[in-house]
Image 1 (cartoon, rainbow, N blue to C red):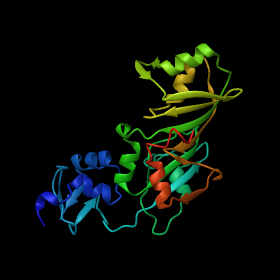
Image 2: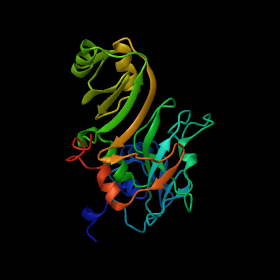
Image 3: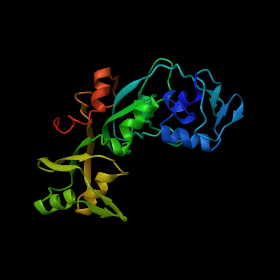
Length: 244
């Protein structure tokens, strides 16, 4: 096989389900990856399909079955599996054959709930989370008070918090103190920070859709595997606005 057609080390690790491409590149650069017993720190190195690759001493299985999982994360659980001190990890709610190494496509903070996708397919997670792909996320948010027209206009135009400009794709009133927020990037605690800028606080924050994929009636704490059509809907950029 022509060497130029081989995947680079970052792509190789990501496709094997080690982590997202960005995280895999970091693992390589910081000396966590070995090929044939030698540490490699260049993410662009080309890798044969049958190469002996390990991450922190753990062999990388390139033929590992790919899983795509929808979880309704309850409040109180964290999304990162790297937090050694967290008592409740969302990924521990997912039980799959072979115990594949799963990582989340984006985050929901500890006090938030709703739809989050886990997978061991790094390419899929990268596509789902990269801001340039504009995969929208929808949230139903109950606030501490009802927003007036001025508040809504301010949020829609964007607010500045700690020197960072936060602009939602849309904010719409559902009823009473409950609103639909639509985000593209989903920065850290973005909705809570936006609400604070107009003098409100979040009572309940629930993600209800990613792309055109909706949470539906999946119970809190439960998960299910995504079918191929549902996986495509999560990446659907054309119809995600229509599903609102």
